[in-house]
Image 1 (cartoon, rainbow, N blue to C red):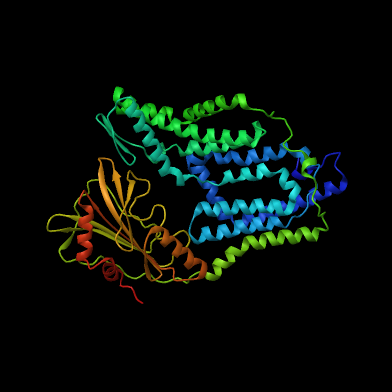
Image 2 (image 1 turned 30 degrees about the vertical axis):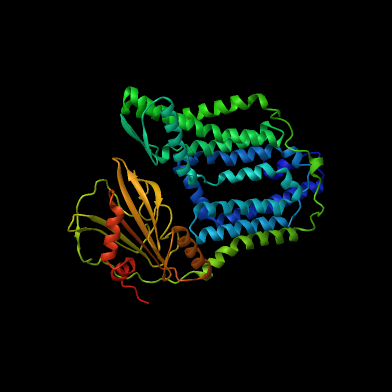
Length: 511
């Protein structure tokens, strides 16, 4: 049975049935066109769903949305679809969000923009009354966006703090530094995989669905959602503490193996059981209750005038959606050749291949040129330096962003704290198992100027892409190990004549 047939019931007037057929056909065509326009972003979302355990549940969102719409078919059949121009504003918001996110290489922003444009298409083509009937399924589509990784550092910190609190309650001596916990019987890290983010996001999606299906009032729905967010966080802290406690009794290897068994879908099932056990007695809505009352929604005041009018709305939707791509094409910078690069000599320092206490390497993915190396002075102090040159920041090739600079992606290194930074730089400390500590100075040169701070560098990159500025960029990472790392790095930069002089000699920039 097709979607248009599902809407055509024996009780439905022929005019309304015809309107549903036309509007659904136009909506399907618009969805197909948007799918072609933004196929790269849709494929990117699907790839994340498939490859990241955090977002595997997203594959269930589309069938759930289909089921939610099917549940409403009898009520929707009593409504007449009609074009509604305010839906174009929603499409425009999504398009603007996509434009800014594309300029800033923010993947989650592009994904959100695409989903909002699809939502706006439904609103514009099916109308106000139908939109009110589909309000929850439309909103639930936001869970298609693979968001939440931004919360990982905060969740790591919360889990570590809860573990420390419980260790204190049980009289177990422990010391915490960032996400690293040291005890007399072992050294533990609350890694990204242990932050609980994948269960929190999946629980949020499940909780939103249950809140809509099982409660009538917004007060109960909000309270249930708060429960769905709080319980996984607390439970994850207890699980992390339990792992450390088991290590105390049975050893670290046993604790790790037990954690691998518990920390999976068994843990998620336990969290679900706890949440629903608490909320069960407050459920006040039957599953087969009508999703909405068509009489309360009413009908759109603007009837369908002609297929040409619907076609006009569809054309406007596609025109608004395509506008950001046309804009970026018009403002795209022309390609430039990357200059030759070499690390310069620094008075009082010589190049060295001395081993590191723990493997580390700065990262500039997508750079056209990269030079890196280690310098050692007469006192045996060592500084690491990396310079990445981007002839044109585009297609996700950015000098700043996740995985760029001094914190290696997919590694044992964790960012512990931000530090006071030298001029035109950002500074922070990272730690690896051992523990081994490093100080990082990061510098960004974008479009001819040294930019202070990661956020400002991101904004400058976006400005250049949006308005056609110089999109050349250079990233510089200076780093050293140990307690005296900061003093060693300052001494190296002073001997090099400052970061500007160091880069000028390495890159030989032409004005």
